[in-house]
Image (tube, rainbow, N blue to C red; front, side):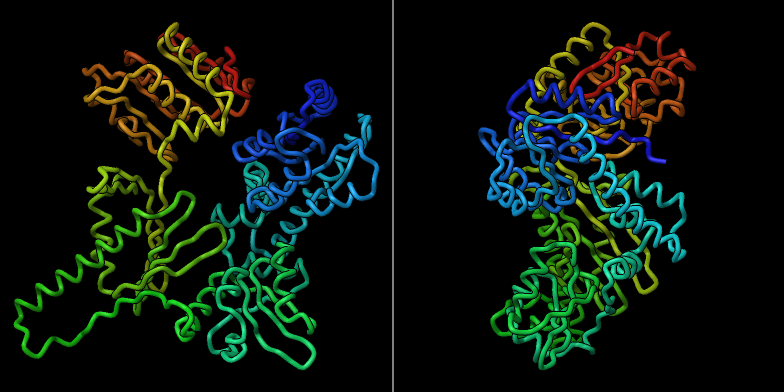
Length: 557
């Protein structure tokens, strides 16, 4: 069963109200995250797991209504329930809150029993909704109870839907996910193909509008029109699709977004007002007067052109966007994916795929890709992985975000104090063992510590040994295997960060006498860390100071 405490974001510009809410929720088994205005609340939602928002309506900078609108407009947070606290009793203000997307309201003065009851009801309704979908998947034989529990935990931690969580874990494929979603929503699930489409009907609608809404007209009668849509949970999209034929009844059917986009691109090429997908089609016929040598040079030049084009596209990939290179026996296509939306970007000759794969292999370091951009001397980092399919191969590529102090400090305004405390701890003890569930945050704190201490040297550089490279730290050596450290046994390392599974950590890691050493383990609570450390004493015997990080504070263990 899920034992993670529900996290309530309480937003109010009055500190006394926040203290009161904390006193109400914490004894009842909730974890409280506090914010004093709407802007700070949005930063908390972007950086932390939040299960429900309890916000005052009247606040400086950004009021509760605007905060509510911002939360509901964001794909990542739109499913978080919102309760508005207001001293206003006019019907118009309640209507304003409903239009902004609030699920419930509480009037001032706040009654402790009432607020607990309303929060409990909203969280229970959300959990039962996710559980209902999961039970349907179990009944269909698509997943097991254990897999559902794993998906529910991830969905709760990452504020995503349980279906998306199961898909991201690789437990459920998208086709089955959409089929089950259609049953839950009592919609027909349509497996689209170009042959079944009415070309004349599609041409009656602006292609850019269909693409934005991810919908396709299927067929039309005298009284109604039928559309296939990809996201029936977005009320704005539902409303706009229905407005495409305002004088007719609209019937909606569910379809995969990839299929909708694929068909739209096919028809887009035939519409003069639209720019067709750029496509490279190599000629299999040699020029009449070309010699074998000149033909070979032309092929090499063409290959380099395609490779340079591919690398140029990678250098333009935005953070949070994923690229897929998909090769079948007939074609090689490059797709861009952001969230659930997939867009075809480029087509290459099928025979160019081995050259692209070989170029990736030159940079392969545990499925990492490093590209140095000559014009700006900029180095970008990527993750890539190959997936074999029945009809071909796919390569998934995503940019690893580059650490930015500006972005880090902006998203975490409280960060100077934890950095200063960490700096003092490292000065006092020199060797730290950190426990926390916030892996990425701790790593960024350690890199910010490097900046503050100015520990960057030409060689050997500061070293980060990581289980997973989820952010790129310039001017450091980022490794993935502990035994690489053996090379540096006789070398003075200016700084060492090691991301380890503590129970499995090799004992000799604790014996090496590096100058500044921080070991990290993903303990979720300080109690779990204390229990693990009580069993194993080698960390203490070699001079490590054990601390736990939570809510911007370092606590001794």
